[in-house]
Image 1: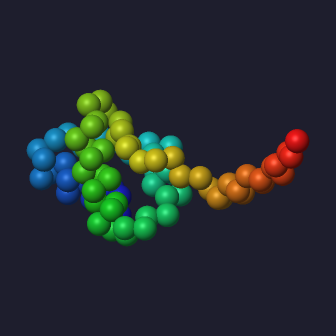
Image 2 (image 1 turned 180 degrees about the vertical axis):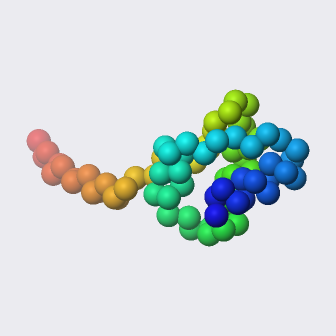
Length: 79
């Protein structure tokens, strides 16, 4: 789907189609996509705008594969 949206966006913006690297594709696949396809389309459009070379530049917060555990609270010292 990302590849299709990239092609459509590049045609619409009259831009050369950049390469989606394996690393960028992994980031796209690992992201939770709370906004679904609309969010993916916006991310791809922003990436096309930001890309100046031959590889797609992704402006996506690095997704964490698993949520980090909450830090444990330290007991307060009473003096």
